[in-house]
Length: 109
Image 1 (tube, rainbow, N blue to C red):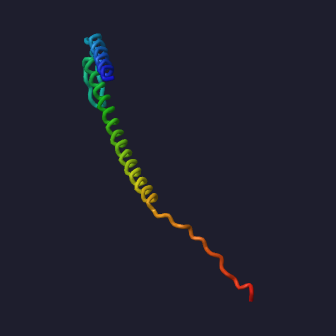
Image 2: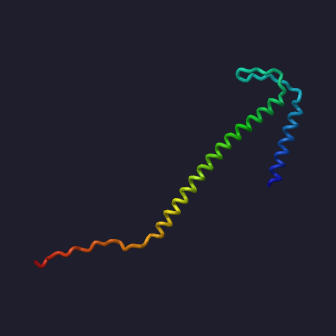
Image 3: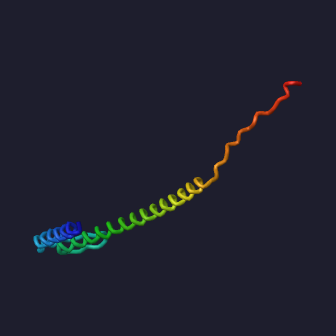
């Protein structure tokens, strides 16, 4: 399975390299909020956008991982508490149910 992962990464790099070679002479102007950049190589813009997307993805994945770990920790704690409660219920002594005896009435009087 690791071979497929590395093969996919290598294929992605080859495609990115080919795309960058096709657009090596392209120059673009960028307006980014209050800043303006003129005649920036297109491949640089694509690469920086890719890196920014990866950083955003990493941040979201990291936050999601922290939430999942917290949920797992809470589930384990709850499972342990329920297991302890079950063990306590299993170890309780059996008791006869309380049955009230009928009261004796003096009908003979």
